[in-house]
Image 1 (spheres, rainbow, N blue to C red):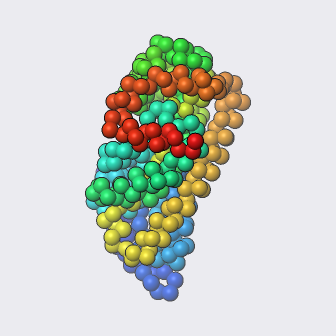
Image 2: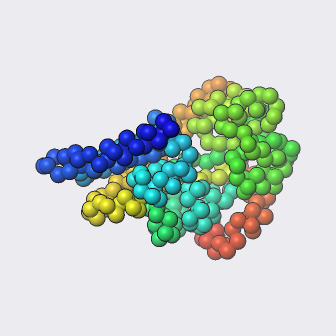
Image 3: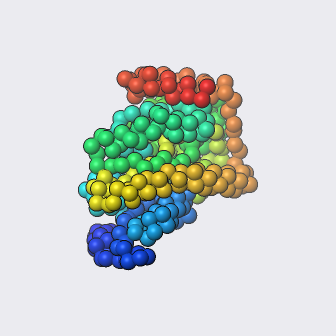
Length: 331
């Protein structure tokens, strides 16, 4: 009820005439963000808002609602975009794959050599075609830009330095069938149904042996205190996407829409920089607290990757050429 009231007030505010410099009317648009204040994507949201207001000379103002104030789940924000209730939302690429199946390919485990490889793909023809396909899919969504969310890695109560060390480990995962299968192929047991706020206690009580996530989450949730072994296997790199509502953009001056798109593209580099800073800060903090970090050799990574053949055959069916094109990018 509280969120519904907040949303109604926001929408009402959008209809109140406000005037920018020179007497032109200002349009206020809303942006939904589930992450908290200070998080890299949230910082990028505010940078996007700043650029839009500056470049449109105050004709358009973007109001950022962080911490899930409007929508606690990204799927809810996507639905709101589709009917034009909000103008923008920052979401993971995962739910957007429902409209552009090719986005599932860029989420395959052990697909990228490193972060630079991923950005070569996303900022090249492959990634940009997928971004354009979001709008042409008829979903009512417009893909504006990719943001970084880092790599996801395993962290456990005991060291993992090879595939053999994964044998029998109970690993908490998001409710994702492909991820569950990934852990099973590595010899472990994927456990779903444990919320992010409950991972710490589940590890502490022996319900699970570890979990997987990025550096900032590992540090901020305190999981490093009960699972002090972090292995840099980088099994997945799922980017974030800044989305716009096609219905809302159609109400704006086409020149301003182009400005909005340009501003979104510009914020990508800013967000990547903020993400790198946050990763470094989180890593330094947990290492200072005694966390042992394992860096795998290319040969060891290859052992993990070799186990993924069934997943590539199942989830990559029909996209074999695309997968090979991604693998060859930058070589």
